[in-house]
Length: 257
Image (cartoon, rainbow, N blue to C red; front, side, top):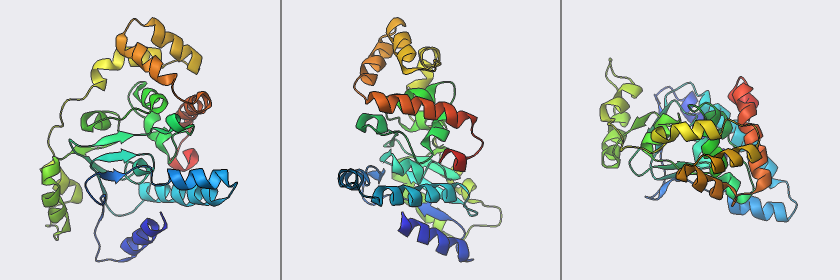
């Protein structure tokens, strides 16, 4: 997190740098769970490193959202938890057919952080509530639908996109325009067809009522979601629902963080 912050400081101050590109190392994904082991060990030791990490991380999330130069995030492969924080608040967010985007924290007794509740609260209908509570991952089309990403670019075109972004832009070209040149329609998603039961069942303001609605809906997918919720931390579900509802009423990312 501190290295990313230092890189942004250099990029902001260097007039020869026109934009920032964030990508993952290796083929597995952008970022997922790198902090979990360290946080677990620190909690067991009653340390303060976790608080210091979250302070630095959340400040970085806010900085990314306000960064004055174009910030392009390549959300290829696995993008979960903190990976969402360093990508989904940026101005230009690119997913591929390999993207797997999620805030899965309720499965480990935590809650969606890094400003993720602001993103999820802004998703159409109750899609964000569904994703926040279940921790389910979404592919490219559903990430765009939920406002977690902007463009789909086939993974095979990423090297060419990166090369184009690194070239001096023409007078009429913008970073967003360059990305748009490579963008295509993503493979079909699943959430758009499930809006009816998701919006109906997740509109309640208590986890118990949501579970009841899911159970009584008569929709197999809804009943499967209820089964899934019962495998999560009950406390995490309660806090997550409250956090998503509050995020919808707060007026800035900083307030949510």
